[in-house]
Image (cartoon, rainbow, N blue to C red; front, side, top):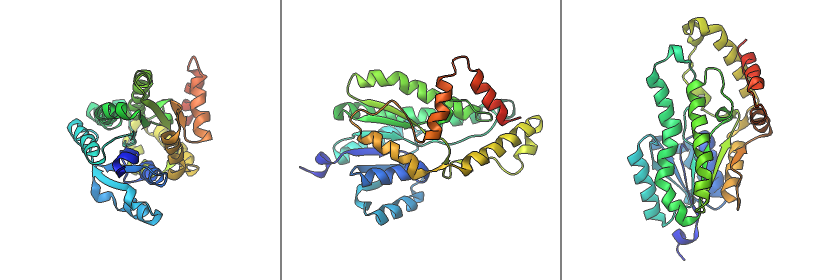
Length: 283
């Protein structure tokens, strides 16, 4: 039996930092052959160094992939199957944060957020599904508690994550009827470069004009939340558990805090509790 016939293969997107890097490493440590993709492979050093230190460098390979490019996603998935003979799982992790509000930003900025966080997930999943059917595999998509509760100044980001959650919740029974398990993973605050990449500079509050006081309050609240964030490795652990589980849950939170936060929305039938909570963040 060749390696490609005996070793389960997982494609993970967005692995240069944060949850993606930690998931790639943990999956390799669990025995998976990991195809770790990232838009810029020049940023692969941290992952490859960590893999070498953990003794799993032979189970991680890095490939370029811009998830917003549907043709690139098709080619990447086809290349993985050609080289490894199979594809058993996809972890859609690539994404980007965004802070802003509708009146003050162009619609193109919103489209860009949707391209990465929503359509990027669809491109990779669509390219992989036929191969995952053959393997009775699984699709695991990292969303966010922001895909459950809409949050101030995260309108575009939450819209994209809500869209992913709705899409995957609808896809799950259809894919499941053919043996493909579908899950979404909802982290809360995680210590990673994600927050530093949302583009909020030192002059953002002043530039927000009438929205400045609310933005200042939101940023202060967010700094406090991320002071108690879980690590990327802690967030990655439930993802790898879902890779390994015979029947993973559809919706998975990565911490007790994330579960409590998401649970508040699911129990809030008229929306008043969530609105009271998020309004307090900006008052």
